[in-house]
Amino acid sequence: MTTDYKLFLPTSKDEMERLGWDCPDVILFSGDAYVDHPSFGAAVIGRTLQKADFKVAIVPQPNWRDDFRDFKKLGRPRLFFGVSAGAMDSMVNHYTANRRLRHDDAFTAGGRHGMRPDYPTVVYSKILRDLYPDVPIIAGGIEASLRRVAHYDYWQDRLLPSILIDAPVDMVSYGMGERTILEIARRLDSGQHIEEMNDIPQTAFISQESPGIDDIILASYEECLKDKRKQALNFRHVEEESNKFYGKVIWQSALGKMVKITPMFPPMLQGEIDASFDLPYTRMPHPRYKGKVIPAYEMIRHSINLHRGCFGGCAFCTISAHQGKFISSRSKESILKEARKVCEMPDFKGYISDLGGPSANMYAMGGRDRSICIKCSRPSCLHPKPCQNLDNDHRPLIDIYKSVDELPEVKKSFIGSGVRYDLAMADCKDKDVAIANKRYIRELIVNHVSGRLKVAPEHTSDRVLDCMRKPSFSLFSEFKDIFHRLNREAGLKQQLIPYFISSHPACHEEDMAELAAITKDMDFRLEQVQDFTPTPMTLATEIYYSGFHPYTGEKVFTAKTEQDKLRQRQFFFWYKPEARQQIISELKKIHRTDLLGRLYPDNNSCHIKNDRRKSRLTDKSRKTGRTGGVKKR
Image 1 (cartoon, rainbow, N blue to C red):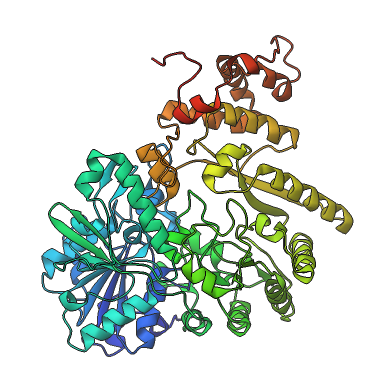
Image 2 (image 1 turned 60 degrees about the vertical axis):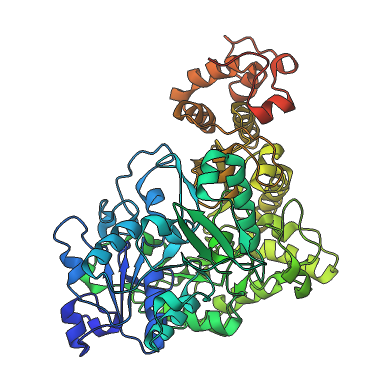
């Protein structure tokens, strides 16, 4: 069967000629393969501009090593170039938490590694600036978005200035970019110069203006290099303004230049987010890949995203910094329209892989009194406890599940996104809502689990969880009991799979040893685990870099060396025979032989003694990283 290339945005000169184009209005360069699906940023931006009658071409994963023919093949756009590293930060894509090179790339055909450089935003824009010095360049995507101010770069292990200092772009469109990119395109189309666009929301650029009286002026990049406390305080300002309904303009100087960051747009209205998801996506990879598997696409090809935004505010997560904390939810009609498209896909076997979002069960949620939300700068609506103004009614979500499942072609829909069980279990004064939320938990567990339900308690230590902005582990224990009870009642044999993180700020080796014992007692052999990886614009990263909590000013310990991280990580795998002797040795070193009997009850050669009171770190020493009065060499 011959593929109709006209169904996709063009990626070559031949495809442009088939459309009768001499010159595109916009050319997008992306670090990802081109998949025409609403989960891939280049497709969303391209289709958004196309809907507004702009001619858009895409150059996916251009070759930056040779004679730059990929950067020349479509010529000069009428309006501007757009550059993006892709749907994932390139450095997270390329390297493990221990800075080791990965051997595959989920966003590339065949999973092939090496199809994009480190920091594509910088590399692509430098090439385009040299080739076309007078054409505007707009950077977008997660990589540029989270580097809009001075930030700690884990892979270089140093503080870097705004990406605008290194990348010769005219403007960064941060966050979800449909409204921003449309405004830029319309103004350029009307004849306005890019240098004159100083008021478009959700943009960052080098400015010659003077800050306004109500604007926020951050400590300069140079000041932050000298004083890490100032970098931590900067983060607090940026996070609070990003979480406001109406934020303020932010400024920061670096290397003799002044970066201006305009506030985020208010959250999308339902009609606006529907319009984005209702665009004519083919939901398929471009035919140029000739059927090669793109792993990231395989994961989401039969999934449906219900909303944007997340009000969880987890310390290690970038969602709220990029999408905002306010939830924008699609209409039921829009969701069902996409579900019917999924049902029409030739490889659809009757199973929707995910009805979810950044957090699976925040659909249609927000503050009961919007006026309170408009004044609020709280980074999380769930931590340290759920906001009294939060409406956590799960009935609209239950209705979505039921309506999708009622489609004749759907055998079953699953929830693959992370579920916030603390949100579903939160106290509620409204009795009807409380009953509905219990019904949601039953509906989820009995009807929408694909054999294994993945949730993210992240740790067992309440002190570490507090730093993470996550609920007490006792709540997970309660949810586990509910999960198994409902499985017994329904005659199901499903698994609960918890996610955990090691080496997060505030986590000590002893905390990981206790995590191992606690989870063993709960009959878990952990699989879904990871080392904390610092990424730009998260609370945890600022603590990792500065050593201080941006909101309290207190010192916080973080494991940083590869050896310290491995010592923490090993406790995840207490059940592996090859790890046993090292863990036993480590427990003795940290004076926690009381845990040996719990982890290895058959280990008769060990003297199991509870010397916890004698040698355990004091609360004060655990905050500072000093241990028991013994100097570390």
